[in-house]
Amino acid sequence: MIPGEMYGGIFGAIILIFLIYKSVVITKQKEANLIERLGRFHSIRRAGFSLIIPFIDRVAYKQDLRINELAVDIETITKDKVSVHIRVAVQYYIKDNPDSIKNSAYELSDFRNQIRSYVFDEIRAEVPRKELDEVFENKEDIEMAVKVGLSDAIEKYGFIIQNALVVDIDPDPNVKDAMNRINAATRDKIAALEEGEAAKIRKVKAAEAEADSKRLQGQGIADQRNAIIKGFEESISAFGNNTNIDQKEIMNFVILTQYYDTMREMAKDNPNVIFMPHSPDGQGLTSHLMAADIAGEMMEKNSKKDNI
Image 1 (cartoon, rainbow, N blue to C red):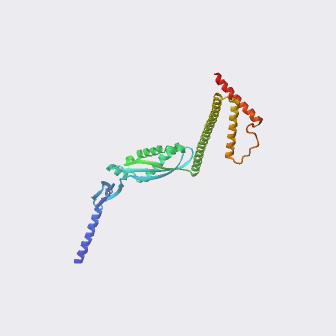
Image 2 (spheres, one colour; image 1 turned 45 degrees about the vertical axis):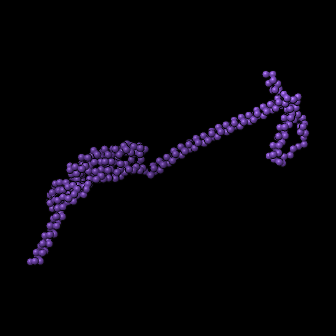
Image 3 (tube, rainbow, N blue to C red; image 1 turned 90 degrees about the vertical axis):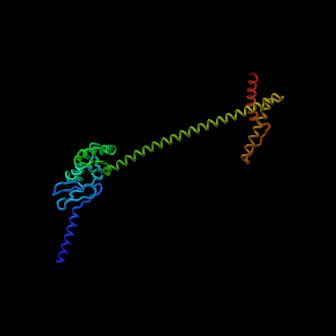
């Protein structure tokens, strides 16, 4: 009898532990357990520890109250007959109140597939009304259309659509290559125009700089000649006022001095210069004629000044 009583006690303890195990419900944070009693919805258990009646009550559903994401891939066609692949990320959560939690579990049999069906319907109604460029440019319009359409359809079942994001728009590979070639050609055209403008600016600036250089060089030469002439005039005037030397002789002396200065400069830069035989004091008929012409012009200018 003693061994039988021991076996009975052990068996009873095992049954008690099993009943306790079946009666305890542990609910995690941001989750909700839906309890059914004899197949009928009974209550909702929140985060923490709770008890149910074993074999009469059971946890029928565990609903996640966090924000979840569902990716939906759709193949559709645009208004300009371009096949395009679109991926939409739907972010949703269950409204945290008893009716919404209950409806989210009992009203929709396969929520994720039903969400996909709604997204398919909205995308295929919105994209075919836009050309490919408009699909890229007005992505927000597609997102808003999907979000509003989904919200109207499933909010009554306890779900809230937080975002419906168009995360990828991928045209047919041939179309993508054509778009890349068009963009590359456009950028090459802009680059060529910019390079042409830069070359034009460089040439204009170089021409302006050269013109300024020539102008300043000419002005310097003119100033130099004026200074030389003025010095000659002052020298001749000084000789004419203080001595009885003829101005023609003075001019010949100045020309002869310039002649020797020129020879000195030529010999300084190139010591191998060869000078042909000549008479420095006479310089030949050509030199006399040149000196006479210059002296005549200088004396005429001086006489005009004296008359004034």
